[in-house]
Image (cartoon, rainbow, N blue to C red; front, side):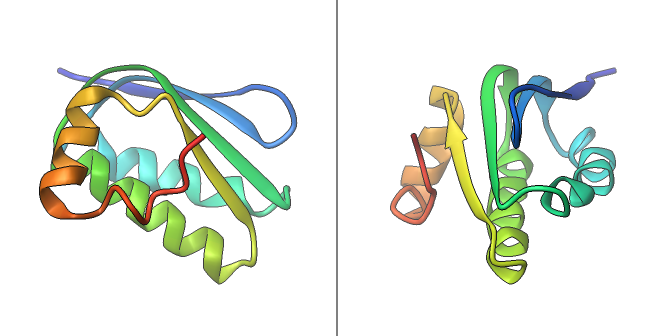
Length: 99
């Protein structure tokens, strides 16, 4: 079974490790909604993501929607090449706030 973890880093920063897939995204989404409550800016570092599919990209888009709805800044760092390829094919790479 695949798993994914989100670990707090510096203020407003989080490191994701594991797989962002149809199997892991629903639980991570439920866990992550509160990330946007305590900081004006959220940085999500995907350096530790080992595998992703379109559900992982959908989660990033959902986080972007939540951040905008709460007037929070959001930045994605170290997007895996596999996810960037899906974003490019989908025409979504231009809307992702990348660092």
